[in-house]
Image (cartoon, rainbow, N blue to C red; front, side, top):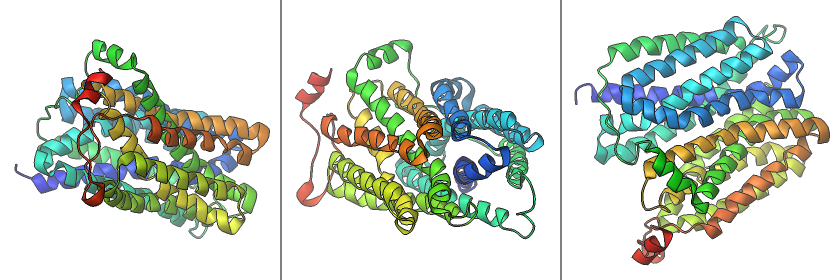
Length: 412
């Protein structure tokens, strides 16, 4: 394929942009709370508006890719991102920020839907796993860089005395997405034909899947994971400011960056462990570690909390991919439709942080964040009740293979 390297670079740029824009919300939370004089409950609508879009667009987005192709889907996504960013930049008021984040969330959800099939076609089937891991590493790098750039902007000379300095980001995003629209027209994008595992599927497939208890539970598992991740990422900065007097543009912002950075490190460690141990064992180990880190973060001293919050990112690192793979390997067919159901569970990033904010106004942020123990407990339980038809392949003394065919027959 001509221009293959250029197209892969373009796709990696999209991964970087998705992560950078998404993960800016966490360090921005205390700044926006202060600038708009928001309660915790009102602040909770910031991540809610963004991640609600994922729940609404994941399945329709897959249908859009099937019918209109990658170029049109990318154009619509970049257009939504441009309009949402411009709305916030032009009118940095609470209502417009909520609306702008929702529109940006719609665009980001579309990008997430189209990017993997595009990467598979561009990089080739045989190299898809390699480029997928590369994309996740780029995603992790951007999630680490985003709070660092935020800190640099907010601590520039003169920034402390200026109102709404953070709006500069959304002017920059507007320009970036406008440029991506132009690039999208000029690049020779390949025609994307979805394979069976990527197709949204018909309504009969959804009815069949949703009639299964394990499908509904795996959906809740994704809700629990994304809710946990976004609660910690979006509220840790405010927590460190409220209870330990850390600076919003200093150590608190650093903690958010380290949270995402250690999550990337955890992914690499997880890749090794998944070659040695059954994925359910890995999920159980990391769930227990996460519960311990969150307990230390919420109830430890300032010195402990500033380390425990980022460490929780390391522990969360493998959960999404393990839950997703356990889910898909637990059904004999309709994996594409099931993927759409699971991706809809990303709305957990809308619901749980909002719940924490609403509770925080009444019982305090520390007590409200105990909700994370419930979500992590549910994730831990998955390691016991999940019954995949196929286990992850391991090496050495821990080698495992396919489950018995009888397991498949029983699942049907």
